[in-house]
Image 1: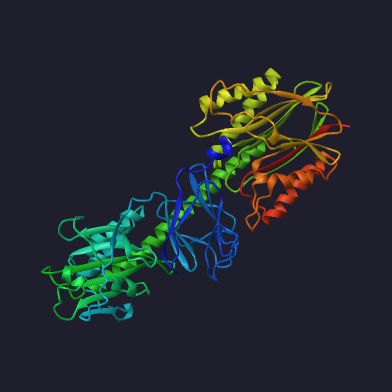
Image 2: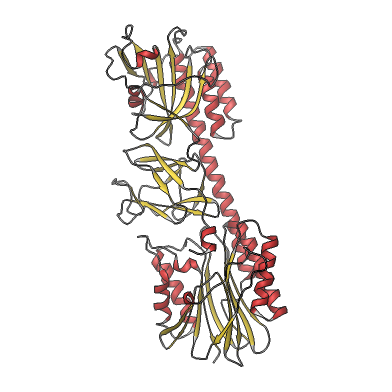
Length: 548
């Protein structure tokens, strides 16, 4: 992997922790590759369930962000309750919920930040009563409770994130109910360990211990509120009774039919007895909280999608304005080019300009980044490279000037891989500077004569100031064609997860006879291979030959 490829990745891994569904191990996604989830054995992580498609979803890390895409699955991929459009990457954030039926996963980007506890096994206690509460059987809520609920409903309209929402939920659930403590918790698959998202004591704030009845959580996981109460005084030798809990309530918090967390409350020892309408009130409160949580998460996803689409649209427009015609002749040199913007990026560049009657410059580059940022760097690089080539008429000097510009002006972590060639018709040569690109062939008579990976390459632009980029001059005759392509061509994957590869590019161009067929054949083959018009990355293919 070269410098540019490494810098495109995000620094931290992404973890998927199942909060509901069958037991499954923690999934940790590497930032160094695209990761596919599905039922097929060829996927990076296998989800063994009939509801899961063979190739169900794709997770990718690009330019310090993580994205998830649905791969035309049958049952859909949901982010925070929003069904994703197939092959439309959506940014994800820490704490999001990814639903691939029958699982719901919590996305974790910062492991180790949450608080956890172990549930107490109270199944051996015959004096413990666990009762499911059916909402349609609830008694009427008193006026004072209705006032609190309306106040909570008014409060959540001002809340901007899920942390504020769960804090409000635990605070309101303790208001004059008799419960001594409240928490929002998540289960970790079938484990006895639970994650504490928020916790508060009626007296003492966030201090104190929290232990939760495993029976309560197990029954609440079926989707209904559950309360726990003791029928007689407990034997203090039994597990949960050591805490002297006399009342507890557990209410599922669901989004789009999937339980994401639980509101847990209890009262212990000499704490006041729970009021008669406390259960009804807290169930109604949890229902309002679930609705607010669902709305909040949906808005977050929709806003991210809108922002990403706007950025990509601007970047694509900038890209199209700067590109030369798809076919042309400059200083006796024919070229044919096809470019396809990617789902996440718009950073490929291509230049074809005359330097004088007998010399022309051809360049192909790939900007590391995504969205409007990559588009802006691409536009700045292309305009400065065009000017530098016209002024210096020398490949190495032009690349040096553009590198100095990027080091001074581009943001940290933004690099450009670039291939620059100055073609001389009179001497039938090409002078090459390869700055971290490497994707090129010279072919003739159905054979590959030169493979760019066999040549020494410099580093991408924008990394080091005053780097000495070396140029090399080689023969380029009338019976030869020079093929240039970006990594979006070779790294595009099929629905089965296989890369298109340099080998396929080489085989295709060795089977054609002119530049125009090279570009069309390779691009059409990539689209057919991907089985979609929405490619993962910008894909550019160009072929150059002397004009007959």
